[in-house]
Image 1 (cartoon, rainbow over the protein chains, first blue to last red):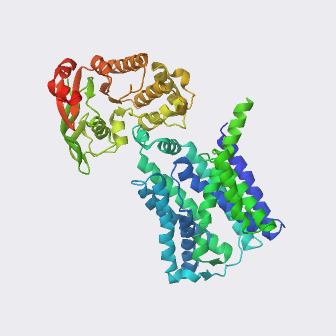
Image 2: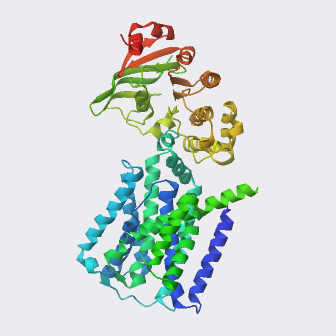
Image 3: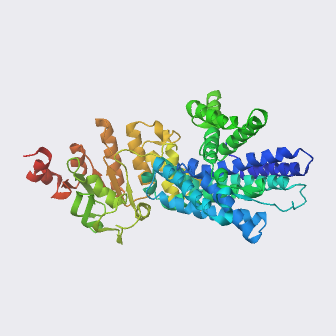
Length: 315
Length: 238
């Protein structure tokens, strides 16, 4: 049953208010440090799903977009001393342009060939950053972040609240696209580009829209990273584990529906954080791998698919 | 009758292979044209060039007064060229009804309840109304063929190109699809039919064009084309 707009936004508003209120409460600081990552994954997974889930173009180049957002934000911070909001907007803008360029690849590349090309984008951009002195090159850059504003007790709490706003916005955009004209066309071209064209769907334009919006949101998700860590360096910014996690979450939650990546990110993100704290930080990568394999084999349509078939059988 | 489609001097090569060589063809509005030829003669390449799935190397394609040979496929669809595919290409994750909603939204600009009603009335005409809610990947071969025609109709075309819509169908099913095509033609839609089932082409077409090795070797009434020695040689050899 589709959720009505009012109900969705009421729910989203309540969740957002609760998260922001949490940031003002006396809860342990670490919760926000970990929660930031979970919310960031909600942004990244929702963004990825717009291209990967709706349009069926699997983008393995997530680290390139995340790092583009982070380094663009860094340039704004270091060059102009711009505030966080400006850093995020600029990060989203530059990553959106990168998305548009990657979208042009879809003119010639489909399926696995598109995915391989997106991997190449990671290495090209990483090489650029490695050789760029202003952003710290290979050794990275230590940053001293300004004090928190808007009445937050610490910068981490503020970042948590900002990421909560971005998560709700990303999910809202992803949901809007899915139910719009654009979403219908993307779904058609995912099933067959030839048939979509012959049904009047301007496939190239829709793919460019999906690539740009997805890229911009991935960049926005990465933009707060320099401030979050007070540090930036290429090896972790361009880390392939971003690609694996971001791809695993929508697959585990359910591809092609806005709720899939949200479920996957909350589940996998929280699980990873819990494992990191209670067992080891190495094991959390294993968690992603094992769950991905289990779901691809047992429930290829993710948790949403399981719920759907369970509902059908209980009717 | 006025020509709705005017193909002149169209050539298409793939590397060193010439798939179409200087093909010219004129189709009148409301005509039923059969396109035949042995495998690999260029039939599908020709209709791919007409529908925009491929771009021809040289020559011109005029449709309803517009030069379309450089336009994207979706623009040609909006001008009124619709087609079915030799190997059906359903939107497999969508229901039959949703398949039709795509052209209704993108060509007709209708959505929601009105689109649903229009889609249902098209499906009704094809005898597919009972399958409206079924996911298209679960349809039988004949149902898929009909759905492809229904989806093409949802784009309200002036010209419908049916690319082997009867391949793999049993005798009675061939008659069902033929009946549908006759009905569409009676509503004023020009139809180009590519078909290997000779009985179907001969009974359907007012005029038959035969391609061989990328050239038109014969153009005439069905009886004249069958009797043509070049056509017999193309199919049977010397």
